[in-house]
Length: 75
Image (tube, rainbow, N blue to C red):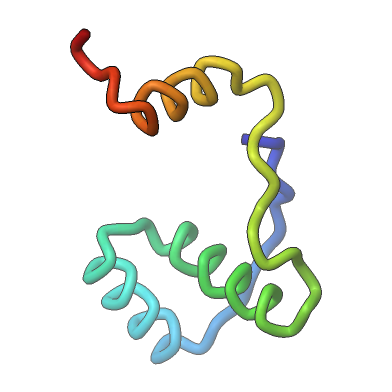
């Protein structure tokens, strides 16, 4: 994962509590929940690509996809 930018975020305590509960329901940290929500909204607004680009140099993942697609698993 690329380096993250850090900054202070002040939230209303009620909003923070709602985000905490939502994050807990989704099995995420509060930080991950906020990042997920912001990313989704940025995509919906057309500020980010709809689908993230695949990670570079993922040859092993491509090979695994090819094997799974071909049905050659365990042969």
